[in-house]
Each structure stands twice: as structure tokens, then as C-alpha cells.
Amino acid sequence: MKNITILGATGSIGLNTLDVVSRHPDQFSVFAVSANSDWKSLIQICKDYQPSFAVLSDEASAEKLRAVVSPGVQVLCGEDSLDEIAAHPNTDFVMAAIVGGAGMSSTFSAAKAGKRIMLANKESLILGGNLLMGLVKNSGAEIIPVDSEHSAIFQCLKGGSDGLSKIQLTASGGPFLKTSFENLKSATPEQACNHPNWKMGKKISVDSATMMNKGLEIIEASFLFGLSASQIEVVIHPQSIVHSFVYFDDGSVLSQLGLPDMRSAIAYALSHPGRIKSGVKALDLTQQESLEFHQPDLKKYKCLELAYLALEQGKSAPGTLNAANEVAVNAFLKNKIGFLNIPEIVEKTLQEVSCQNLDTLESVVENDQLSRKIAQSFVKSSD
Ligand SMILES: NC(=O)c1ccc[n+]([C@@H]2O[C@H](COP(=O)([O-])OP(=O)(O)OC[C@H]3O[C@@H](n4cnc5c(N)ncnc54)[C@H](OP(=O)(O)O)[C@@H]3O)[C@@H](O)[C@H]2O)c1
Image (cartoon, rainbow, N blue to C red; front, top):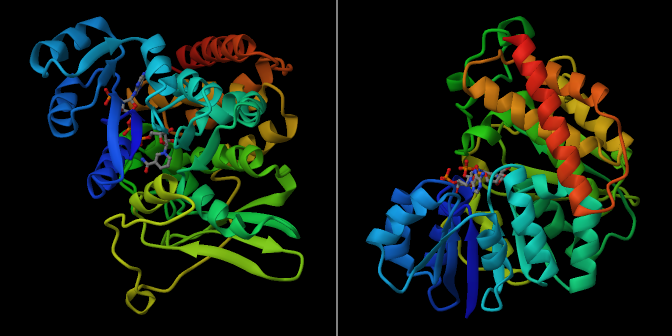
């Protein structure tokens, strides 16, 4: 029996994880869950799964939950408590599914404690990739990617990475694939969150619309698989059936296919090196529309270009890119800035914040905070 801590249990990845886990009560038990403020959703989750711990970000929400759950569930609050449940001796696997930089500390905590980290929170790697990979190596922790593209590559590399020449991350192109650059100026949060293939949280949905999500994935892939920017390509594949390609020197190309449903990657992260049922229907290629592949338009998807730039610069640049993007996406979701202001703010912040080495977690946090402050000032000036 493996005990699972699900960080971000009320989100899209968190709920999908609960769905997969509940199909295998003989193999997995939910040890701890967390949410930011959605204590109401945690009531049902606590009832159904009886975790030992439930953690919320603030005391007011924790108090409300505490009043209604059974005494067997210990309700805690704050970042230290997230770190605690991620590193708890009774936790075997940690699903890192908090959205944004807020998920970094608990991911690091799980890494230090040598856990299996099922990594959905790519931001942990973008912010402090070298540090996180170092911790994983030293503690004996393992990272199993949950992003469908990285899960695909991870699965394709099960036989080793000898002779690997490059990878290609597939990208749906998001809801604006057929929208002209001109019309992007007036794109609304509702339109941006209306992804054609995947049901996801709001932040990652906007990132898919700007293609910053793919940009962050390029950086994530670089850390996970030890690849340079020139070895990571992006190809638009609107049907989201092929979840990435791995190219080898002998001309072979390996790939993993499946319907666009995150439960496949989540199940693989839970069961690796074996496989379990995920609830995802089998793919029938005879019933699919034609599979298309084409080059991304870098003028339209400026965020992709900025992510390559940040990866090439290295050091603190990916962290700055991520912080500025989080601030800009948040402002866009609140209708404070336009859709095309997102890449503009990220670019200006990258130019403004000097690039430096990040040797400690404190320096990662400092760079993140400084970048957020500067990005915020650009948001204000775009008002
Ligand atoms: N959704 C996908 O299909 C998908 C695919 C690949 C990778 N990912 C990655 O997985 C992560 C989660 O994405 P998602 O789509 O599941 O997001 P989501 O639906 O927005 O859920 C986010 C979860 O994190 C919690 N949370 C938000 N802010 C927090 C904070 N400041 N402190 C602590 N907890 C916080 C939320 O709690 P509340 O409910 O209380 O707000 C919720 O449980 C992201 O890093 C994303 O890039 C997602």
C-alpha cells in the first residue's frame, strides 16, 4: 500500500489524481490533501478518503473545515504545514499539483525527504531546476513527470537515452490557433480559458493560449532530461493525440499516444515502472480525425520565443520569466491588462531584472519576489 499526499487536491490535477487513486483502493491510500482556500471542496474529499491531514493556506479556511470534518482528520494551515505533509515519514508519494511558484517549497521539501514526486507543478523546476535536481540526486527521491508531454518522453526513454538527438514537444496551439494576431488584442479571459482539448485550471489554460505553457515545458524538459535549448523543439499538433516525440541518431523516432486525458499520465506516475488502469478510454485511430503537425508561428506566440531566450540565458532568467508570467496572467484574468500585454510584460521584466546565479533556495525566492514586483509595476503602467 502506498500513502499519497496530494498537494492541490481541489484542482484539476488533484481531482484527477483522486479519481485514479479511487480505482485502486488495494494499492493506494490518501494520506494528506491540501487546497488554497477551497475548504468546501475539501469537506467531501475528507469524507470520501479520510486522510490523516488536510492543509489550507489560511487559518480562517482551516477553522471552517476543522468544524465539520471528522476528528480523525487533522486540519492545519500555512506553507510550513505543506512542507510537513510533503516530507512526512508516512508519505510515500507526493502529487505536486499546486499551481504556480506557491508549489515550490513543498516540492523541495518532498525532494529533501527522498519521496517519489509526481511532478505537475512544473514551476518548481523553472524556478530552481538545478537545486531541485541536485536535491533529488542526493536524497534518492525520484521525479516522475505528470505533464503529458514529459510523461510521454519519460516513457519513451525507459530503454535509455543512448543516441538521443532531440525531442519534440507537441502543442495543441490552444483556443487561438486559428485567431489572427490582430484579433488577439481583444481576446477575453473566457475565450482564453476555453481550451479545445484539455480541461485545466485557469492559469495553465491562459498559458496554453499564449503558448507560455509550452515555453515553461521547454525549460522543464531541459532540466528533467538534461537537454540544451537546441535539442528541444515544439510542433503544433491540434488533436493532442501524440504526446511528444523522441528522435534518435539512427533515424528512429519514439512516441507515446493517447486520448487527451491527464489520468493516463497520473496513473503512470503512480504505477511506474508498472501500469495500472486509469479510467481513460482506449485510443482508436480509425475513429480519429487526421493528425496534423506544423511549425508554431513565433510572431503570434511571442511567449515561446521568450522562454527559449530565458533557457539560453539560464541562471535566474527562467525564474524571472515565470514570475512575470504569473503576475501578468493574474492581471489578465482580472481584466486589468489585455491578452497581448502578457508577453510584453514578461519581455520587459526579463530586460529589467539582472540575470544572476541562484545557489540557494533563498536566492530563488528573492529573485522571484523582485521579478514579481517589477512585473507588477509594468502591469500598473499598462492599466
Ligand atoms: N490541469 C492540467 O491538465 C495540467 C496539465 C499539466 C500540468 N499541470 C500543472 O499542474 C499544476 C496544477 O494545475 P491545475 O490545472 O490542476 O490547477 P488548478 O485547477 O488551478 O488547481 C490548483 C490547486 O492548487 C491550489 N492552490 C492554488 N494557489 C495556491 C497557493 N497559493 N497555495 C497553496 N495551494 C494553492 C488550489 O487550491 P484552491 O482550489 O483552494 O484554489 C488547487 O487545489 C500547475 O503547475 C499546472 O501547470 C496541469
